[in-house]
Amino acid sequence: MKPLVLSLCFLTGTAFAQALPPLNFDAPTGFSSRVEDVAIFSAPEGDLTIHMYPFRRLGPGDFQARFRETLLREFVAVEQREGRLPAPAKVEAASVEGAEASLIARFTDERAGARRERTRLAILAAGAVAIVDVTANSGAAQRGAEALRAMIESMSVGQPKARAAPPPVLSTPEAAPQPATAAAASAAAAPAAAAPAAPAAAPPAPLPPGMYVGNVRRLIPSFVGGVQSGGMWITGPQYILLSAEGLAYRSYDPPRGGGDPARFDWKRAQSAEAGNTGSYELLGNALTLRFGGETISAKLAGPGRFEIFGTFFKRATPK
Image 1: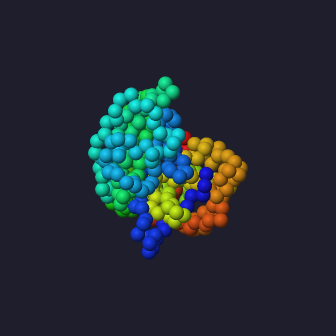
Image 2: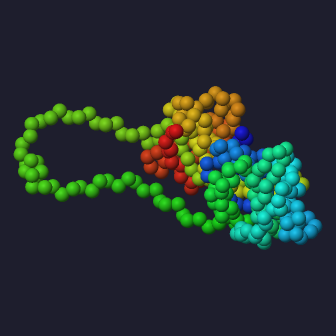
Image 3: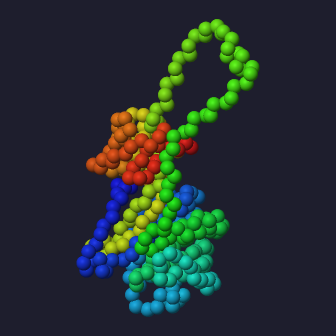
């Protein structure tokens, strides 16, 4: 897994004039992710996959006519293109905020005697097309329909959709004192035998070891002629694992071991994902995370919570 980098590039002059718009969306809940030239999301059962292709120039021809004729399969990776269609695709208009036009097609793909359910969304903006291509085994399409619908509804071109501000971090309210009854008042007034003082309970650790989860935006850049142009902004969970020994690990997928640092393979992570494995240090309310050559400053935001660049991470229960 490549190091996780949150970045934003501003292009100027001729490069800016030719820049393609970014596509914003929320990662489908519960899906694992992989980022190559495209963003790939897989259902937990492994029978439904979503390929997200960033904006690329449409070229000559009418968008709607080309999609209805070819489903713009030339914008899909060769190994993912459909085979024979036993029936014509059902094409209808879709709605994506900030797009000039959007079309969605549903069809059955038949290859080597096997049938797969396909859904393809094409989004037009600034003379370019972004593609969402979904492949599902029989029965999986219906099971993943809600996750797909939520992801499409979260999409926007250019600016991200407006979101409600996160709730403020509040301290846990103290239990309100209860009015004393007459019996209780009488008992309190009566002298009582001295009892041995109970040992004071140790205060809970402000940041106990465990898995912490926060919702972040990350950029998957797209390059045209060696220059960054557009890309995709994905909003979804980021996981940070903290061990009792001061080790730290981060990922966009749930860490192995169910989120329990004691069951996580730290040696394997250090070898395979050195850029996402490191250490942490807590001094007062200041939390310092180190991954590879990157240092991140965070601060505590209450018991079992910390904040990084306005994103709150909360401790989750291991599975």
